[in-house]
Image (cartoon, rainbow, N blue to C red; front, side):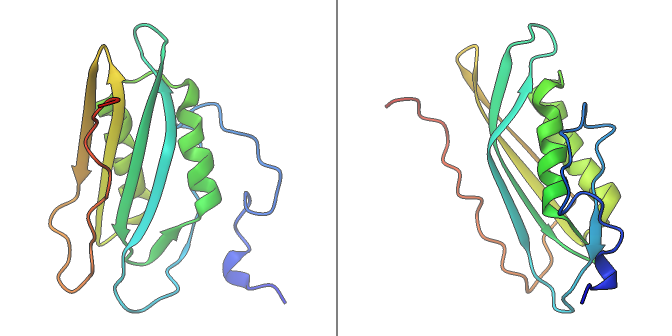
Length: 153
């Protein structure tokens, strides 16, 4: 028996190619299955994009935390959306905040934060953080758990 709440999901369970770019990627959502407040975390330790000037690859560990309201993001569509950045040229700040803003637009969460922990470019690691405000009271919000960059030290 198929749950009709999931009828509109087109990517899950099908052979879906990686989108050409983040702007055309479809982020699918489903109704929040819970009535109690809770937090969802996605960790993407192998995020890639490219430098908009040199075309060199950039790498980051992304951590996305959000407290859903009416919608949750379907995880395969999120994976494909993040993968669409692989050939997208943008600075670290733009990539990190674009992802956070797109999720806010699509999901209208109670609260969202994203940490972009970027590996060194030119010898300097860059960490970028975006949040929609203060986390809601009564919801357990753990630290993101990504250590500051130390190199080989």
